Length: 426
Image (tube, rainbow, N blue to C red; front, side, top):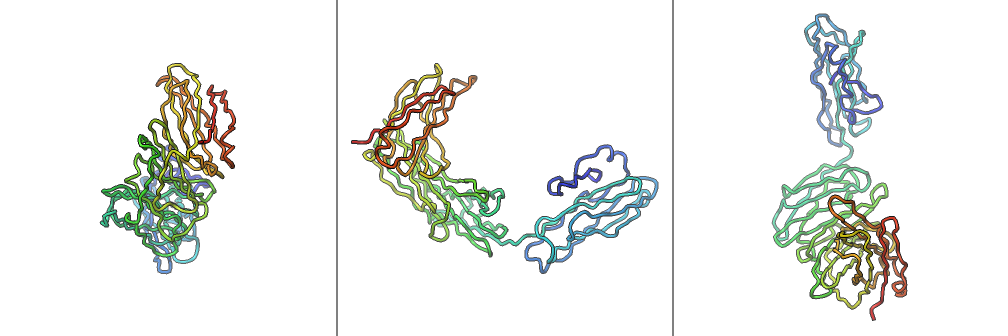
C-alpha cells in the first residue's frame, strides 16, 4: 500500500491508499507500519476534544541508512512530527501523527496522506483519517407491537429530506435502537409485525435539532377497511403508497403491497398536520366475473387507517379491444391511477387476457380527480422476445362527457392496437 501512486485530485475517502505501483513496490526497500491510520470519531460538540496521537514506524530493509522527509498532505487538524527522520540500515525510526479536532476548522470527514520521500526517489504514503462529527444528535426509536409488547420484529427506514444521502435501513433486532444522525430534517418509516397483521407507521418530517425519541407503537395504527364491489370479487392487489420530493426535486416513494386489507394498519406519527408535497394513494385491484380497479388520494399526509364501502353502481365501464399480433402468445394487461396534476408510483397486478378479445372492466366514474393508463404485455415464450405497449393514458375528466368520446390509440411500433370507450352508467 505504501508504494501506491496517489491521484492529487481525489480525496482519501474515494481512492484509499491509491493506485497499485507494482514496480515501485518491488524496487524500494522502505515500508511503513501501520499501512493506514484511522483515528476514533470525535463527537460534536468539540469543546472538550483531546488531541490523539498515533505512532508511525518506518522500516529500512536495505544495508545503508536512509533519510526521509515527512510531508502530511491534509488539513490543519492532522499533523506529523518530526519533519525529517533517519532510518538506520536494517532498522526502524518512528514518527508521531496527531489528530486535533478541537474547535476551529471544518467539521466532517477529514483526512489525507503522510508522504515519506528521499532524495533518491523513495516514496512511501500512509493514508490517515478522522471524523470530526458535524452537529449531530441521538435519535432513539422504540418499537411496540399491537399487543403492547416491546418488539424487534420490524423493518424501518430513516430518510434524509434536506440532503441527498442513502437511506438508513433497519431489519429488526432490538426493540430500542439509538442512531447518531446529523442535524436536519428526516422521514421515519417502519412496518411493525404483530400476531394480527402489519402496521405501517410514518413520521413525514422529523426535525432533529436535539436528542429525540420516537415511539413506534403499532397500537396507533388504524385498519384499512375497503369492501369489495361485488360478492365474487377477490382482492388481487392492495397497496398504500406515499410520495414526497427529495432534495433534488425528484419524486421518491415508499409503501406497502399485499393481497388482503384485513391485516393491514396505518398511522401518521408526529404532529397532526399536513406536509407540503406529501401524497398518499390507497389502491385496490379486485378480480371476479369483472375486474375492478380503484384508487383514492390523500394530499399532505399519510392516512391513519382508511375505510370505503365500494359498490358497482357508481362505476363507469371501460371497454378495451386487444388485437392479436403474435401467434400462440400469452398476454396480460395492467393499469394504474394517477392524480390529476401528476403521477405516483404503483405496483401493477396483471390480468391474463386472450388475443384477440374484447374486455370490459369497471372503473370509478369519479375519475375527474385522477387519470389512468393501461399497459399490455405479450409473452411468446422463454426463447422469444416479448412486446410491451407504451401504456396510453385515459385523461382526467372535467365533466361526465369526457368519458363518452375518448381518442383511439395506435402503437404501430409494437403492433398493438386498442380502442377505449367510457360508457356512463345509466
